Image 1 (cartoon, rainbow, N blue to C red):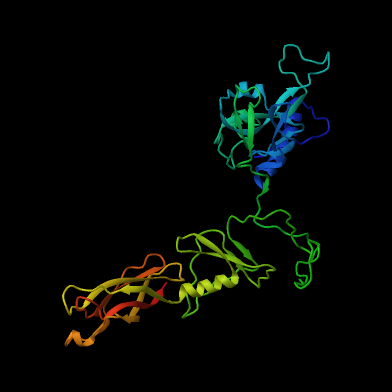
Image 2: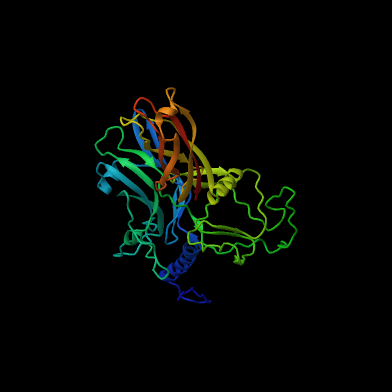
Length: 415
């Protein structure tokens, strides 16, 4: 329930009536800050390191912050961290988070002769200021207040503050008690809204001439955002629509992770469009649109590669007339990032006869060069290996009919 002071002529007013009047306006303003905005830094409040005369200092620059209870915290002049902060926060050699808290102090006593005897705390003003609290990093000194949590107007009771960053502290140092300011986890004041509307006197149906250069005021009802935009969840541009599944086509997967963009109309890009496809080591490689499409085609279609073993020397045998056998691997690297399976065919090529070959001395045995079996290894990444068992000969102990040959294999690799 919210009470607002109601005045009437002849009413007898006391101090608590005026306090209630101020409390009403203060709480209503803070409710707007609290429920319509995200707490954080509104402006300034950077941590700045300086070294003057060989002595390092860290200062908090002027600025404004709004805490989680909607309380405004002003810093009107640079505040330099020093011995008082070391003592008040009992600092040791470590890294500390710098928290800014709202503070109020009663001030301005009544004029002489207007005070009430035997009454303590007779002050006519509240001096609103700030307090610096340093906590060992990482720190999280309070839970965000819930909707019904009461603002006690005293941050020492609720621990609410705004994080400005962190500093390194060495209380024993004569030159750098405070150093190395880091701006991590700084949150800026934001707006809580599910909808942004344009001015009511502008026509939201005005034509949008995409061919011409536009401004925030032409066409009307446009939103001009100067800094970068980070969408932590999904982005929908234009009227939302369902992604229909067409018979015979690949079903559109359900998007569970944030970051998906859905456009209801065309997309115009002045530069290139980049996307990533993992390579054989699962490292993303960023490709322009043309290379990306080419890679997609390669990933979804079989890749045909040809490889050779190099020259295979046929050794002579001790037993006259024996054929020579062996196993030679042929390996190929596919253009696919990863190969799930492959088939291969091998054949001998570029063979040479031994210079001492005497066919008549081999008797009934015929000169032979061929493949007896093909044994593929499981693919490793995008590498495919085929083990080829071969037979060549015959040989008579002093020479081989086939001196050397090359194996050539055709690989069909599947993604």
